[in-house]
Length: 137
Image (cartoon, rainbow, N blue to C red; front, side, top):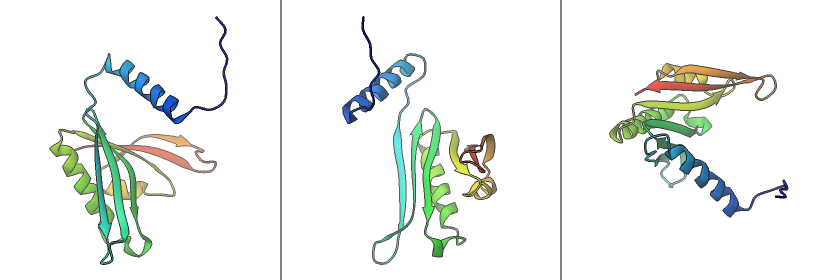
């Protein structure tokens, strides 16, 4: 058998890889029951000024993106979005939440909401750290 390694994947091949990995995992773990949980904050003109993008897998909420425009930071919008996502996740049967953040982003913000550092990756990027935070819902 002759095999080669070449550079790049098509979009279809990328989806195939993911599907095959998930099918393998499904042999060992309960159903993932993935769901998207997304909320937006809009101004009077309908423009996006804050939002949260999450998903669930097994009984975990994964917070992927939380963003609040500069002039609204410190006014509780981030907290409200996280709490809304956590409530939606609990309604779907989730008992835990997880997220990644950096030392220059929102570690302290999430810790105030009850998240704790599960682990740190130092020098990612160079001179900084990335943190995985978790919380029981």
